[in-house]
Amino acid sequence: MRRVLVIALTASAAIGAGLVLAVLDRTTEANRGGEGRVGARSSVSVVPDAGPSLKLKPGSRKLVGELALRGKNLRLETAETWDGAECLLQTEAQGGGASQCFESGLFGLSRIAFSVSSDGGPDVFRSLYVLGVAAPGVASVMLTRTDGSVVRVDLDRTRAFVIESSVEDLAANVLPARLEAFGPSGKRVDSVAIPALR
Image: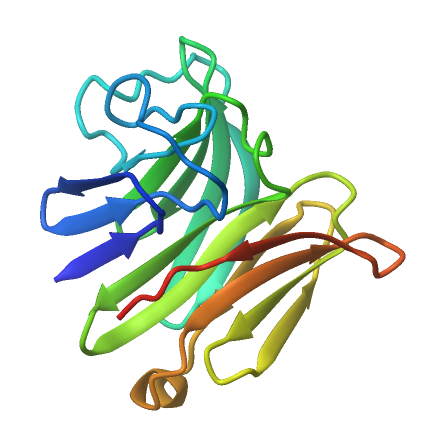
């Protein structure tokens, strides 16, 4: 069973066969608005084409980048909804994907917009990756994992990134724990905790 997790502190929604939550390491309040909409301090994500709740403004879709993973390619885009939210859209060449929409814009609450996606879990993950895009002015992103190891990604002009867990890491229960964003000078400009996946 394919499962997409976008992790949140307080808001969650069960959609189809997967559990989709939103990413925030901020104080949250009750979700404002309908399914797939994110209030100024909360967020809920939806699977793309999950009914009428995700109404994108025609012509607003913009390609961020195409990213390669083991056995699949992902297309990362941004788009705006009719009521002014900004969304991060993730689609697979083989079909399927996820979206996350923010009333305050992609970077209204954090310098990093990201999701954690997995196949399997929570007991045994067959695959797991962190995918996202950083705000302008962010030069690199660092992922700290539960064993204390780090993976640092220097960003290109698209500012898109994907960090995939190895099969060995998943077998050893080494999971994503925190994302940090760094400016061109190397100064940390944001830090977002990823709540425990197990």
